[in-house]
Amino acid sequence: MKKVVLLFSLIALLAVQANAQKKKSYGSSVENYNTALGIRVNPWVVGFTIKHFIQGPHAIEGLVTTNHEHRANVTVTGLYEYHWNIGKPELNMYAGGGAHIGFYDRRDYDWDRYIDKGKGTYVSPGLDGIIGIEYTFKNIPLNLSADLKPYVQFVGPTNFIGEEIGGLSARFTF
Image (cartoon, rainbow, N blue to C red; front, side):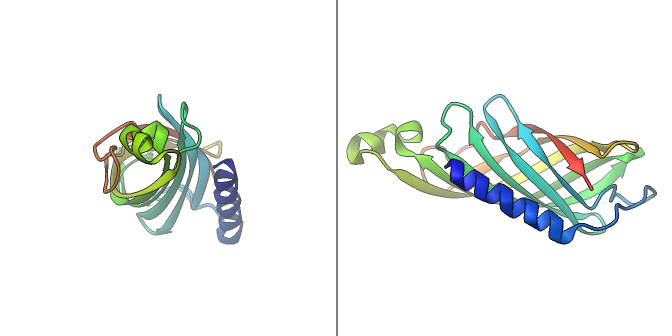
């Protein structure tokens, strides 16, 4: 699974290089940056995040996360987000949704299947929602965000709002 995380990191880096453009100026627009790359954490999950503004307040975000205890498990998430200003030009709220696909070890996430079928990995697709707040610094290329990301999975025992429900992200903007 470490190879999968490395592969997605390289793809993200190439995508950023291919789409790199001049940073937007501050003003009434919610686009304080074009692209941001960083990390996302919560007490259970750590991973990479990349966010790119498509046009105006519309952005897409990609996440590749893994559990602290069960590092063989990886979730890949794609989100659409709509941003709007709240008070200051550097402060935005956002909301949206998307989908994810998780690759989980049976032993870690589905003990009954592990007992019946032994070792193995199963794939679990699902839907995600997101609502959050972000602050982009004017003088340094840094974006900080906090959000709630409830989800539902269609396969496996984790078909509820779980450990990936919230997170904090720190991103380098350009």
